[in-house]
Image (tube, rainbow, N blue to C red; front, side):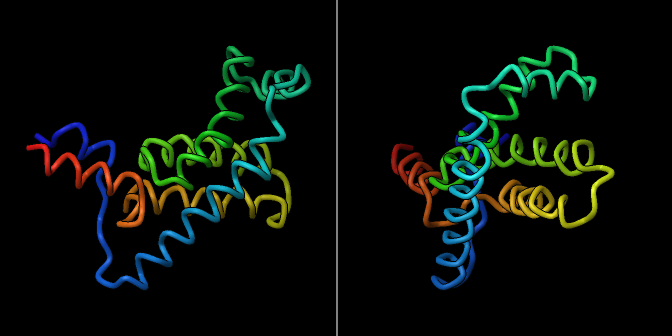
Length: 147
């Protein structure tokens, strides 16, 4: 059985420093873009946003409205930092799936594209991990030293 730190902070490593730098740049840029361009504007959650979520048929619309906003803002910041990357990426992926396939289901591709791009980035970090240039990697190194 894997230790808890491996599940929360685990990841794969690329073979080159350029690959790691590119992975880090993608993680930082996409995380900050999600948090600042999409999540920040939803906080604090407005009554209009709660009603929008209710019209989609979600139970507990205030809970799901806050969940979506926090997934985008906090999840984006966690991705950018590379901290708890896999759990953050999971919540971002769920939120972006709802955005792409429910909110924008009938919209043309150009309206779905941002949600789909963030979904693909989130899935990549969910399955790959944050990489070597991240807080997760630092925690893994410190946990190995503490054994």
